[in-house]
Length: 182
Image (tube, rainbow, N blue to C red):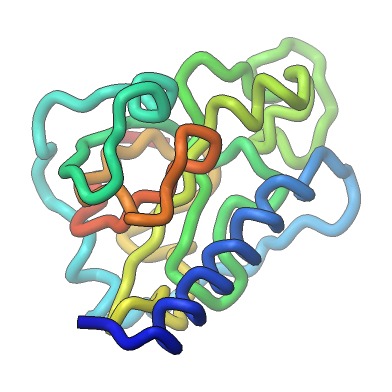
């Protein structure tokens, strides 16, 4: 059982992560092209070799997910300017209904994974935060590159809805990630 101080720390970390997701937007400057060429065995242990089966979309999950409940969700890594948490095993999962800039003929957006051509409220309403935890806190390594993960990959996430999740801020504590395609 977590003590009060650890619970407060976890809420603070999740609140900061959620705020960062809300603030992130479309920008054509400063692309983070770095990736983990060598990811740790700890992160690779979460990468699934086989599909976990049928999944629901991010928008369906936001409507039906219950804190603490098991969940299998599919979507694309994106819906944010920087969908991978800097130095932490987190990512933003965008709903399949979002149109990404690379899907628009002639679009020159350099960060096509952020879906910045969509209305901001639609982006916010169709994404979820995914995190890999150790001792109740996100693992201190970027997920970018783990199992080949990169922006716009279609993935399926298996895990549990974080106890602090709401319908406005879905947080998934992943136990596995399956990379369908990029």
